[in-house]
Length: 202
Image (tube, rainbow, N blue to C red; front, side, top):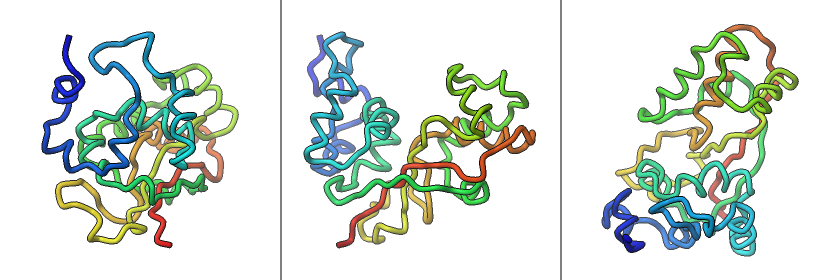
């Protein structure tokens, strides 16, 4: 059986781990990353454990940090963030605004694939998600976006793939589905909710 450090090294190396913030290290889920285990901390328990310190909505934890904690792109692009100094707000975006959100190169394929579908029935998502698209013209779970401009340039490390403006953290397939529905004129809501991660300057 691999130790916790040996398991972590399967995903990221020591240098990548050491340069993450202390708050990132404290966000680690209580999970056996070596294999699926029924003793893993549930998303509900994870949220309850963290909420006394971190102001992170459960939907954000579930789609981002809980599942992608050791993902190399995730660690290098966002592991430097001081999560004690951020706020996450649910905001509304128009289609045009979402078209201007940056998608890092490694994940553009997910957006492009999602945008290629021409009918609701083709979308490779859960039936409840398809029904939500049909009935509400938007996604069921708001994606996560980083407000890059809220962070001063000296906080953002050179090794991270961070642009400017708004950058999509999680929800690449959903963004593609949004484009597909817009392209096919199947009916979209006027605005779409997304969780926006901002640095608290005060």
